Length: 124
Image 1: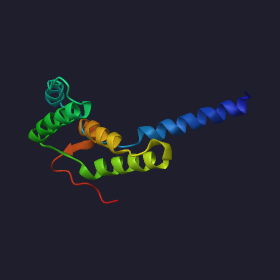
Image 2: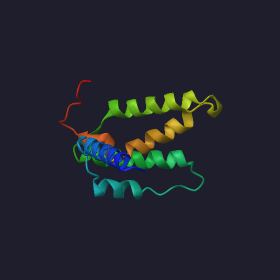
Image 3: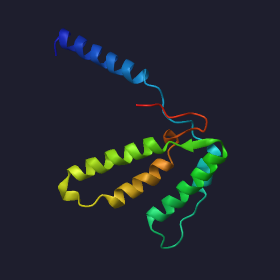
Image 4: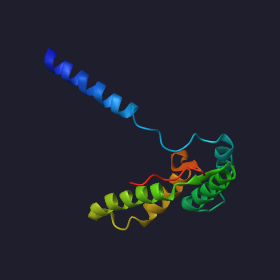
C-alpha cells in the first residue's frame, strides 16, 4: 500500500469519524429503575418468548411514562416499516410478521426510542 493510498484511507476514516461524531444522539439515557422493572418480569413456564418480551416492554413503558418520557411512535413506525421492507425484499423468508412483532417489543425496550414528554417530533 503506497503512501498516497494510506493518506487517503486515513483522511477517509477521519472524515467518517467526524461525521459520526457530529450526529445528534437520539433518545434519552437509560433509566435504571425502568430497566430494573423490565428485568424483574419473570417468564412464565411455557410462555412464548414474544409474550415475555411484550410483558417486559409494557413494564418498561409504564415506568418511562411515569418518569415523564414518551415513546416516539413515528420513529418506531419508521424503523418497523424499514424492517418490513427489508424482509419483504427477500422472497425466501416468507411472512415477516413474527420478526416485526419481536422487533417492535425490542424497540420499545430501547431508550433510543424514547424522548422527554415535552419534546415535539421535528417535521421532516
